[in-house]
Structure formats: C-alpha cells, structure tokens
Length: 551
Ligand SMILES: NC(=O)c1ccc[n+]([C@@H]2O[C@H](COP(=O)([O-])OP(=O)(O)OC[C@H]3O[C@@H](n4cnc5c(N)ncnc54)[C@H](O)[C@@H]3O)[C@@H](O)[C@H]2O)c1
Ligand SMILES: N[C@@H](CCC=O)C(=O)O
Image (cartoon, rainbow, N blue to C red; front, side, top):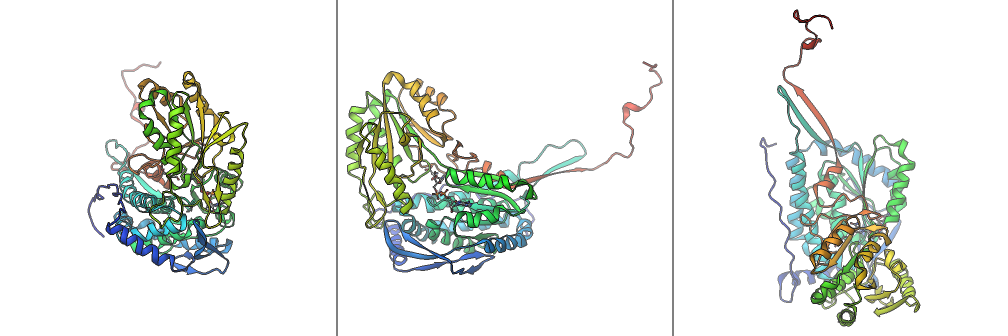
C-alpha cells in the first residue's frame, strides 16, 4: 500500500493516427489485418477468467464478405448467467476494497496498452468484424476507447474528492461505495469503444460486471477482454457472456442482486429491458440503476444564410450521413434545406456521393464498408422500397443494395415532400438520408417540425451565418438534441470535449465519458463523526431564567 494523497495523471485525448501511405501505423495495421483474415478463432464465454466453450455456437463473419468466418462464438445460457453472478459476487468485496490508486492504475495501463501494442489489433478486429474503414476504426476502437479509459479515471478522482462541509467539532465524509449488487453491461454492435466503456466504467467505480457484447461485434469484444486481462484486471470483475439478448439478459434481470444496467443499443431493446425490470421490481434487494443510451433520428437544418457555406454543408451531410454506413447513433439521417439553397446543393451532393467508393474495408481506398448483417440489409432494403414511391419520394442519389459478396447499401439521398414521412421520422441505421426542402420564409415552423416530428433527441446540427437564425435554432431545438452542433456535422463527439447522450426516446442522457455517467455507478454513504459528543439531554433553551416571568 502507499500512504499518500495521490493525483492521477491529467488526461489527454489520444491523437488520431492518419494511416496514410508510408506510415508505420499503416504497415502494422495491414500486417495484423492479414493475420486475422487468415485465422479463425474460438470466442468463449469468460467467467472468473475461465474460458468456457459451451458448444452452442454462432459464427462471426465479415459484413463486407459474409462467406468469410472470422470466429466461432460460444453462447451463454441461463446457467452461465447464474455462474457469472456467483463468481462476480464472490470477488466483489475484494475488488471494492482495492485502493482507488490501484484500481485506477489498471485502467490507465489498459489505455497505454491500447494506444500502443493493442492499437492495430483492436483496429483490425473492428475493421474485419464490424466493417469499419481504417479511419473509422482508429477514431473508435483506439482513440475513443483510450479516451474513455483515461478520462474516466480523472472523473472518478473528481467524484471521490467531492466531500461535504463540516460544522465545528465534526468531520463529514462521502464514501463512494459501488452499487449493492452487480452491473449488467449490454453493448451494441457499432462502437468498440462503447462496448469497452459500458463494461469498464462501472468496474472502475468498484462494481463487478456481467458484460453482454453484441454477437456481431464479438471479435473486438474478445480483444477487449484480452486487453483488460493483460492490464491486470482481476478475474471475475468483468465476465463476458455472449449470446442471444433475452437468453442472457432475462435471467440477469431476474436476479435479486441486479444493481444496475449499463446499456447502449436500440430504443425498443431498452424499453423491453426496462419493462422486464419493472416486472421484477419486488424481487430486487435494491432499486437497480438504469442507464440507457439509445436510438437517434439526427438532423441537419440549413438556414438560407448558409448560402456561402454550401460546400461545408454538403460535406457535413455526406460525412455525417454516410461515414460507417450511417450506423452511428449520431448519423445525420434527416436534412432540412431552404428552397433557395437546394438548386445548388443538390448537384453538389450528387457529385460528392458519386465519388464515394464502397467495398472491402481492407482496401484503404474505400470510404464505406457494408452494413452489419442480413437483418440490417433487409430492413434497409424495405426503406429503399419506400423511397421508390414516386408520389411521396424522389431518389437524389443511390437507392440500390447488393448482397452477393457483402451487405452493401449504396449511400442514398431521398427527397421527401411530407416532413413527417417515415424516412424522416424512423431510425433506419444505414446509409439512407431523407431530405425535406422548405420555403425559406418557414424557417421557424420548420424548426418546430424538426422538434416534434421524431420521438428521438440525440444529435442535431444547424448551418447558418445569421446569428439570429442560430439563436432561434438553439431555442426551438433545445430539447431536440443532447448534442447540438453549429456549422458542423452531428457526429464525432470526443470524450472530454463533447460529453455524449440524448433525451426523449434517445436515452437517459447520462453522458458517456463524463462524471455524470460515473456517478450512476456509485451509491454514496454519508459518514458524520462528532469529535466531542453532547453529554446531557436538555437543550440550553430549557434552562430556567430567573428574570423571565410566566407568559
Ligand atoms: N445513444 C447512443 O449513445 C448509442 C450509441 C451506439 C448505438 N446506439 C443505438 O444502438 C442501436 C444499434 O445497435 P444494435 O443493433 O446492436 O442494438 P440492439 O438493441 O439490437 O442490441 C443491443 C444489445 O442488446 C442486446 N439485447 C437484445 N435484447 C436484449 C434483452 N432482452 N436483454 C438483454 N440484452 C438484450 C443485444 O444482443 C445487443 O447486445 C441503434 O439504435 C443506435 O442508435 C446508441
Ligand atoms: N459518439 C459517437 C456516436 C456513437 C453512436 O453510435 C459520435 O458522436 O459520433
């Protein structure tokens, strides 16, 4: 042990490496891509550090080449969930008692391992398993993941230092205990860094975790577990239970020991989990904390005063809508353009989209890969059918999909007359962007439409030079987005700079990568110590005063 009031190293954002031709990082990444493409690994259930091959298996495939199997995934069932709960609870006290400096050092070591030796490994796993380009993998699987690890340690330290006032002769303390139970961390497929944060943020605060990764991103989840093991995380603190959502989730949520849920994924899934928790409410030893960051229908609204910034607007629509195939919860998926800008913006968008290369992400010339799986491909295809309805919609670019080699959907722009068309209201989670062209004079009405038409409130952007137009958007769209951008695309939040999360149907807005999130994983105990306690019952006002008569 050390006897010192320590301070953690100040965090800094991990620089994004370019992977440009000739760089060492490009060579290293290409070597790991080659190796991983040539092997087929087994991904086990991991409980208490033990690898369990359950025999009930699924395959992990490259979305851009779906015949290529990367891994065999062993799925957990209710018995593994029970075993994981028991194991996690058996290591809980020792983990919670470990001094904060020692716990923090494990996560800081993980950050540095990821920034160095694990960088090409995590990037390659994310590229091959989730069909991200080298740049999209770098900003997610390395940089954002490293940032989560470094900044969370810093925020946790800030929380621990939040201490109450003291009256004379007393000392008050806040003891930041972990939750009384285990945390169920459930991850989406689309961000490796989010999966890592979902499992590690509660663990940093002294909790034990059941980590349920998405089956389609199980390859990167496996390397997250390897990274944390190598960083020195004790066995049993994070237990990985891949498999079918309800098969793993329902027994975990039926446990009286459920302390909290740390979820990121779709709104319907979180709603179903919240309902399950409601049905089980009288079984629990404590009220479980429910943290869920969910879907989005993220907007870009252009004002007529953006006329001289048309290129920036066009680039924001294309990057915001089509990077990672539109599979970011923050992706621009509905765009509102004034009539005066549309005649110039439309051909510019068509030109930019026509230059986009899509294909195998190991070919570094490609800007886009494939959507994650057949389910997503079919769902997106049904929206492409809607886009062909000539009375309602007209396709500005793209509109086709091809599943022969991989789950490829062309970047698609659809113009819609009705601002409440389904393509402008529903989350598609694919490279399909709806565009509504409005009369310039109806800017304020359009902002109100943007606010009310969709149930989500995750990210959004306004493009304008006129300050009044920006202020009007800030006012009218105050509750329409948890992350709001002015003259920028609505994606690409950076930990420590733009804490991320939304309200309404987009989640509980607990801002991943901030102290607001970490505070949900602690159940503080207030301690008051009195140095000189009173030794008589009566208070001074009860003493008799010989000068006072009866009232
Ligand atoms: N707001 C955010 O910060 C954010 C970030 C990333 C992704 N997302 C959202 O995630 C979605 C895409 O991810 P997805 O397709 O993996 O989401 P999803 O809801 O289909 O699945 C998410 C996870 O939930 C699991 N699951 C399903 N049913 C369950 C149950 N009953 N109990 C426990 N677990 C269960 C799945 O197996 C998976 O691991 C989109 O809606 C996107 O907007 C949101
Ligand atoms: N935080 C990411 C989105 C995560 C959701 O998928 C962004 O800001 O683009």
